[in-house]
Length: 223
Picture (tube, rainbow, N blue to C red):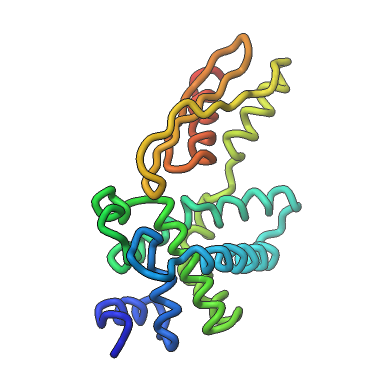
């Protein structure tokens, strides 16, 4: 008996994957809240590295830019927000295996979970199909992001740091001022301040994105 539903098998076929070891792909889709002996965390760890290498190679091949600019684009293209955006685009949420509480808490819309599952799927792809086919999958799914603006603009935190230095101010300080919701659907609010200038808040599903939004809000308000 198949361990994946026919609907999920059809979905995999639509994105160019034909699972052979179905338990591996079930693991990649399974959140820790589910009553199961496996979840996606180990595959996510692997997939994160696979994605990083695939995108780094792609940038080296296609983008004639110095190391700093390449790193800036790499960080944007492999970020959890980008992974989640691609996961939403291809319909990952409909096939994730979540526990009851995670479903009720909006787990299918969680940027953290969607991003993690996207990386776990790349980990499964690497184990079953090898690097070459996984690289082709990344280039197919990430094509729109790669061709777009991701990573072209300076990161808001870097921009704020340079602004502070250029204006003779102390470096920005980031403080977590609020965290709410369960682990799989948490919301973080971070406040950034520059002494004798002001402060601004940012809220997101992870601290890094909240810091980025706070820095962006600060620049819009004071710079």
